[in-house]
Image 1 (cartoon, one colour):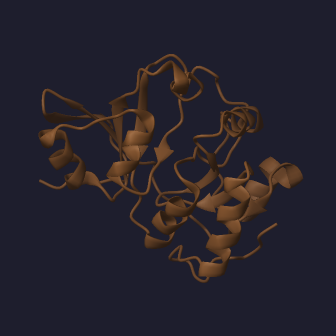
Image 2: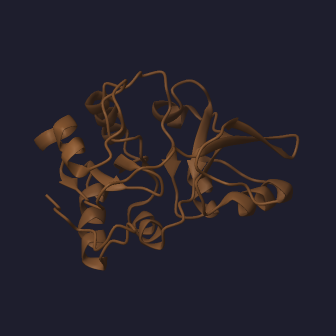
Length: 203
């Protein structure tokens, strides 16, 4: 278990802690980490068993997809998502940042992620350490650290009350208070805001 791995309240994590977390996540483990918004219950988005485990841990509605964190726009190809020139320009406006973009993902291969909606919301987070982690682990699902219907954990103590020893590690960044990410989709070459949150959209 990782304890107090983060060096300060900015969410910067040590390189050794990133390596340890990455190894656990790559092996199918699940843990709590600060994202660019709030604490998330993270696990490999490319591991179906891990994703299903997170649904069980959070007692999450199985029809609701989870946001996927990626290290860079190029990771979208892993999900069969191709952007045209205009869409890539829009992605550069919002990433990295606290904006999650809903994109078509119709492949049956990823039904365990899109839950029949045939779309997924992706985000490239801003913190450099988190993108470094994502480069090591590959894409991660990162729903808020709580049981569905309960308040998101603001501290590791609160997260521990939810999940205890049922997960492999906790990454402590002190108290984390933030709105969830802004959620948008690209429609006719323009951004349509579906949920206004912490992220700002550059003009």
